[in-house]
Image 1 (cartoon, rainbow, N blue to C red):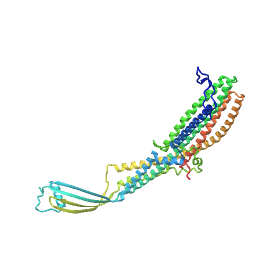
Image 2 (image 1 turned 180 degrees about the vertical axis):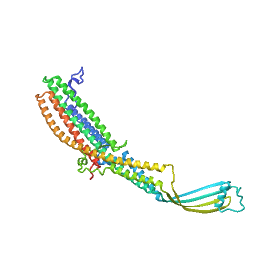
Image 3 (image 1 turned 30 degrees about the vertical axis):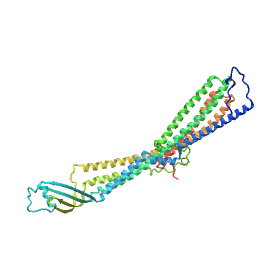
Image 4 (image 1 turned 60 degrees about the vertical axis):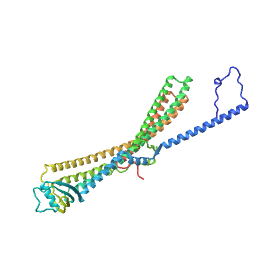
Length: 477
């Protein structure tokens, strides 16, 4: 504990009375007062620090990668859009399956007319015909008609079955699209988290380099003041420190941008608590390289296979346009007239057969279009198969290269760190030139940054390899 004491030159002095030393009781009271003030200041600082830590802890949450991926799959717009497409595909299945259900229709209408033809029909339906009726002038006749009809399709040339098969294949394709969107989102979240980690570790490396340059500049300034070092060597060290400070500012800005990109990948909404990824997630560290090169689980291939079946079903449906359509139907109606004060009931039932003899070429054109779409899907499936094979091989080679870079950069960083330590010791003992120290520190910082980047890139390459093989980026428990 120290008290604030002004230097002798800064103390107020009266021009009329000499300054006398304080007595012992006065010095004791001053020490007690200083102790009370210092204790109050210390208590205030502790309260401020505790409040700051509590507010920062409540404002930012650190999530493991599994929770980040789950949040992205739940609220990211891409995942929501994929789920909406699945719901739309299921609605198409319900629509196609309605062909096997009867169609029931109810209708009613009220009319008034003096048209002989329409009036005569209403009179007959109302069971109100008499021979005294004047057919040329029946007068005004009203009619309330209520009709109920039921219809059922007996045969549609295979179009209903093909439409249902196509709709079911569409649901399967939409499900694979949802799985693809989930894998892409999960991989994007993990990559974004690794980019945050890489950016922050680069900041840490640059901060360590800046501290080393600060120590070197301090020694260099002392040697220059003692006339043991040239001004140009001191300026070179100061310029290098300024450049490192500039790089540190850029790295901090990049780390902030990487964090924003991560929050976007997770699907964080404005006003939600700010989240950060766990720096060293054990789940990501436990991820290993797959031994098998099987790509049969890729959602793209499974989705294209389902679309191929849907296209084949659409060709079958188009060919059904040349076949007849058979429908069964039955109806019952009630007619009520207030002018005749009579009513009547009737029914109708039967089977209809419709054959498309000539429709101007619409059915043939529809068939050619379906066959062309089928050929297109087959070509896309072949292209996807070849492209995925190339993607897997590229991802595998990239992961091998990343692992080699990690091993080499780790050894280089260790050697550069030891070389820089020895150079600093020699520089402090005035047995090393400033240019040599600058080179050693630069190599140490560069080697450390390379190792940091290589370590993060190895995990990113592994995630890309697992994604290329159709696996989840994080291993499942």
